[in-house]
Length: 321
Ligand code: NAP
Ligand code: GDD
Image (cartoon, rainbow, N blue to C red; front, side, top):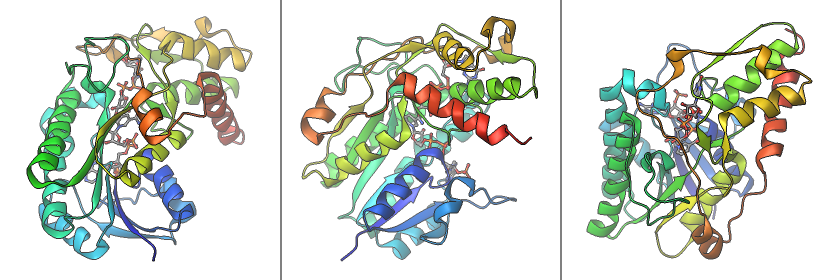
C-alpha cells in the first residue's frame, strides 16, 4: 500500500523537489499551505493535481492537528520556516514563532495524532554560525549568528528532546546551503544569476550585493531532498550533516556567473551596505561522511554545474521579456 507523506513548506524550493521525489516513489503527498491573498503555487503547478493541499500555518496549532488528522502520515517533513536569514533581524519575533516554536507545534501534532510517523526536521548549517571547527560535522558546537540561526537551534534541540522523551522516530538534517532554478529571489545565488541574466538581455545595468567574501558550501536542492527521504527510511532516527565538502566565496559565484555570459562582473557589481548583515557567517564547509556511510547518500551536482544550471534557467526564462 502507498505511504502517506505530509510536507510543510511544500510551496518552497525544497518542498517542491521533495514532492516530485515522493510522487515518483508512489507516495500519497499532502502539502500544508498557508492562506495568502494571492496563491503562491508556482513551484508546484506541474504537480498540483497530484498533491492534496491542506490549509494551515505553523503558528496555528489547530490547523496542524487538522492536517495531521486528514493526512494520517507515515512520514512528516517539516520544511516550513521563515527561511531568509536577512529578514530574521527585521522580524525576529515572527522568525522565532515560525522557525523555532513552529517545530514544537509540528512535534505536538505528530505526537498526539501520528506518533508512529517518521519525522524530518529541516535543521541548518546556520546553527554553526561562527564556526568552532572546520569542516563542520555532527559533533561541531553551535554558535548561531542570527535570529534565524537561534530559532533553528531551538528547533533542532526540540527534535532531539522529543526523540529522547517519547521514543519518536525524528531526524534532523543539518543541511548546508542548497540552490536550484527554483531558489527564492532574495537568496544570493538566485539574486546573482537572475540579475546577470537581466544584464545579459539588456534589462538591467547593475547588481547590488553585500559581503562578497562569505564562503558557502553550495549544493543542489534536488540532491538534498533525497538525503531527507533516506533519513526517514533508516531503522533508527539520527542527525546528519548534508553538504558537498567544497566551499566557495560569493565573489567566485559572481565571477563564474558573469564569465559564463561573456561579461566582466566588475563593471556591474556595486557593493551596497544595505545588504551587509549585522553579524555574518563567514565560512561554511560541511563533512557529510556520516550521511555517505550510513545512508549511502552522495551529492551529484557540483559547484560549476550548479552555477551553469541556474544561469541557463534564468537566461531562458527572461529571453522574451
Ligand atoms: P523556502 O523556499 O523559503 O520555503 C519555505 C516554505 O515555508 C514555503 O513553502 C513557505 O510558504 C513556508 N512557510 C513560511 N512560513 C510559514 C508558516 N507560518 N506556516 C506554514 N508555512 C510557512 O525555503 P527552502 O529553501 O525550501 O528551505 C526549506 C527548509 O529548509 C526551511 O525550513 C529552511 O529554513 C531549511 N533550510 C534550507 C536550506 C537551504 O539552503 N535552502 C539549508 C538548510 C535548511 P509560502 O510559499 O507561503 O511563503
Ligand atoms: N541574500 C543575500 N543578498 N546575501 C548576500 C548578498 C545579498 O545581496 N550579498 C552578500 N551576501 C552573502 C550573505 O551575507 C551570506 O553570507 C551569503 O551571501 C549567503 O546568503 P543567502 O544566500 O541569503 O543564504 P544564507 O547562507 O544566509 O542562508 C541560506 O542557507 C542556510 C544554510 O546555511 C538559507 O537558505 C537558510 O534558510 C539556510 O538555513
